[in-house]
Image (cartoon, rainbow, N blue to C red):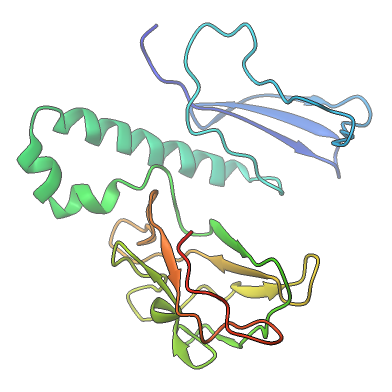
Length: 215
């Protein structure tokens, strides 16, 4: 009672196995016993926690199977944030001025997480250079500036090598940025609540510059 618990489930279509984790530890692994395919067009509501007496927070879905190590790392990150916030209750000065504390409060965001920026039409898909952190030859922090002053790059000024353009409906309509470590705690600089602004010139559609809008 009165205690947060980290719960995670994974399903592998390759092995038809469902795994349950509690506080980062694998508790049981069972057969899915057939197809777990969901027809999203016939489902009107997705209900989670029906009949559960408690609170649910930080609910996340992934489009791939997380490894045991990734689930353990995510739990440890969230647990560290909870302890940090508890230690700083009633100590506003320490909360806002402690650089280590500020670096650790990321609500579970970690290296390897993906940020998907989707456009409503085709784009020119300017080349991404992971070695110098640029898009179309322009610093990514200028092309997609974070209002918080945070950076997409690591301490060496580089991007994760998996960052790329993808085509969902239109050509190059999805920019995938894979977050990379930036501080001594192994966490990205991007944080929950960050908003971004396009420079309106580097990433363009087929006829005009995409408007400068915050997301």
